[in-house]
Length: 165
Image 1 (cartoon, rainbow, N blue to C red):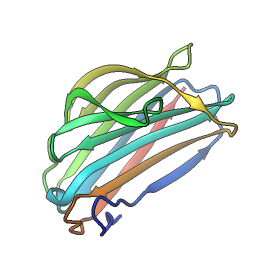
Image 2 (spheres, rainbow, N blue to C red):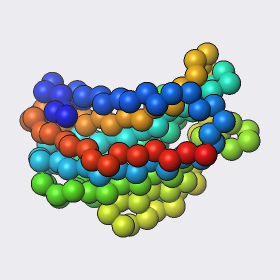
Image 3 (cartoon, rainbow, N blue to C red):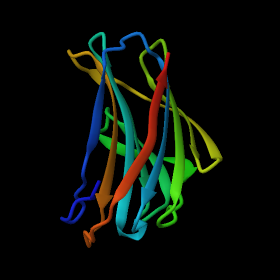
Image 4 (cartoon, rainbow, N blue to C red):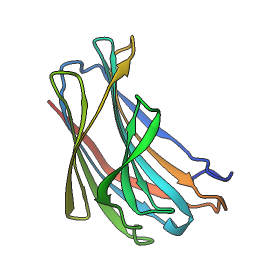
């Protein structure tokens, strides 16, 4: 995938997996490779679930500029919220292993449980609200974001899996 070539643009990779309305726990596991990470503003990784009239947005972002921190999406405020988990700029031309753990609690809150990048696990336990949606489905996504200079860079994915129950 090539990141956008306009300032702060991005390219979205998205895969719809089907309807799994009863799933409440998720492990998003993948490997990614970036050729020029210094050109990236952020790398976004997400799982979305629409079930029973609700949309659960397990959207995450490794913000690289100006901070190096994991952020999560809050649909209530329509904004990224910084976590306490660091997200160092990945090394160029190296495979990185990322694992995100998510769940939705009985009240319907989206829980960002933990993130592990290259063996370094950070527990977050951040809770965000859900919003409404009339569809049904489960999806995974990755979006590389360009920075202000919009220098082109590419990201490759391998062994992308989503385990859920």
